Image (cartoon, each protein chain N blue to C red):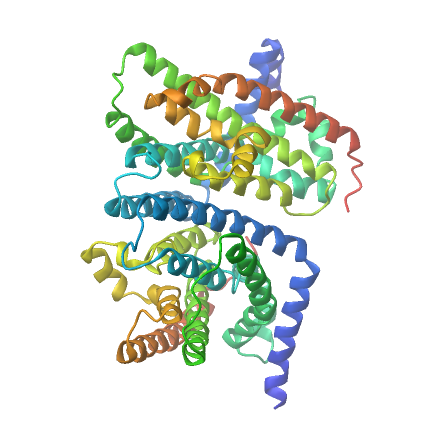
Amino acid sequence: MAVRVAVAARLRPARRLVYIYFRCLGQQMKAILAYEADFAILMFSAVLVQIVGFAFIWAIFQRIPSVNGWTFWQVVMMYALIYVTEGVGSLFFEGTWRVSQLVYDGQFDQMLLRPISPIVQVLAGAVGFNGLGNIVTGMVLIGISMANSPIEWTPGRLVMFAILLVSASTIRVAINLGSAASAFWIRTPWSLVPTFVHQLGDFAKYPITIYSLGVQALIVVAVPFAFISFFPTAYVFGMEAWSLAGLLTPLVALYCLFIAVVLFRIGLRRYESTGH
Amino acid sequence: MRGFRKYVSFARTSLEITFVYRAGFAVNMIGTIFYVVAMFYLWQTIFLGNPGALGGFTWPEMKAYLLVAFLLNSLLTWYQEWVMGEDIRQGVVAIDLARPIDFQASRFSRAIGPVPFEFTSALAVAAIVAFAFGGIALPADPARAGLFLLSAGLATMIKFGLVYCVSMAAFWTTGTEGLTVGRMAVQNIFSGALIPLVFFPDWLRAIAAVLPFQGMISTPALTYLGKLDGPTTALMLAVQAAWAVGLIVLGRLVWGRAVRVVTINGG
C-alpha cells in the first residue's frame, strides 16, 4: 500500500486524481462483486426497465406515425440517452447519492481527513452495477436509432456524436453532484433534493415541444436535462431548428460542471461534522 | 379481540412513522407527479394530433385512466417493501420471530396503516392535475364508483401479496433493491400502468391475461371507466380475488421455507 501511495504521489496532479479515483472505485467494485446474485439481479433489472420503456414507446407508435412531428426512432434515441447517461452516473459516480447519509451521520469527516479532493472521493464513493445494464441496453438502442437516422455517418459526425455523448454524461453527473451539495443545507438521511431533481429528467424522455413554456424553461434552462437527450437527438437527426442548440451541449456540460463544483465547495464550508 | 388489537397497533404505528418522515413521502410523491404530468403532456399531444378515440379511449377517458393508475400506484409505497427487505437482511426479523404474532399479518397491518394518508394525498394531487388539464371522465353512476372501490381494494391486496412474496427473496439474496426494480418494471408493463393493455398486440395481451398484474391497475381502471360489461366485470373481479388469495397463500408457503434458511447475523 505504501508503495502504491508513493507511486501516486509521483504522478502529475491531474493524473493523480484520476488514478486515485479509479483506486477508490475499484475497492467499491470488489465489495459489490462479493455478492454475485445481487450484482446479476441489479443488472438484469436495469435491462428489464429499459425493455419495458421501449415497449411503451413502441406500443404508442403502433397507433400513430409521429408525436408532434417526432418519429419513433427519434423518441427512442431521447429515451436511450436519458438511460445511458443515468447508467454512467450509476456505474462510475454513484457516490453522489451517499452524500446525504454521510453528512447526516457526520461521517463525511473521513473524506476531509484524506489528502485527496473530497469531490473525487464523493464521485468514487460507490458503484451502482445497474448502470452497466443501463449503458449496454441504452447503447444498443442508440445504435439502432443511429442506423435509422437519415444522416450519413461520416467519421467527423461520429466524433461529434461521441463528444455529445460525453457531454451529456457530464451534464448528468454535474446535476447529481450539484444537487447532492444540498445535503450541506437540508439535513435528512435521504437524498431528498437529488431525488427530486433526478425525477425532473422524466420530462426529457420525450420531445420538449410537447410541453408548455414553463416546463420547457425548467428542463432547458433551470436543470438542463434537455441537453442530455433532446438537443443531441435533434443534432443526430438533423432537425434544422434544434440541431444548432445541440452543438452547444459541450459548453452546457462545462457550465454545469463548474456550477456543481462551486456549489459543492460552498456547501463543504458549512459542514460541521456533528451529524444531526 | 386482544389478538386483533396488536395488529391495529402495528397499522397505527406505521401511519405515525409515515407522518414523521413526511418529507420523504412528499418528495417520493412529487417524483411521481413529474412522471404523471409528462404522461399528460405526451398523451395530450397525441390526442391533439389524432382527434377522436385511440384504442377505444377518448382524451377525457385516457386522463381518467392515467390518474387512476397514479392513485393505485401511490398505495403501499416502496417504503414498507424496503423496510421489510432491510429487516430480513440485517437480521432484525429475529425480533418478529420471537414475538407471538403472525409475520404476514403484522406486515400487512404495517403496509395498510398509511393507506388512508397515501390515498387522500394522491387524490388531492390527482384532483389538481385533472383540473389543470381540463377535467376527466367520472364514473357513470354511484354503483360504478362502488365497483371501482371494490376492485381498487382487491388491487391493493394483490399488490401486498406480490410485494410480500418478492421481499421473501431477501432471505436468500443480500439486497432487495434489484428485485424491487425488476418487479416494478414487469408490473408496470403487464398491469397496464404505463399504457392500457388494449394498445398491445394480441400475443402480449395473452401473456398479460394470465398474470396477476392486470388486476393491479387495468381491471380497476376499466371498471372505473365502464369499459367492461356486467358479466365481464364480475368475472374480472373474481379473477382479482383469486389472485389476491393465491398470492397471500403463496407468501405463507414461501415464509414457511424461508425461516429455515434464516441466519440472524446481519450481512
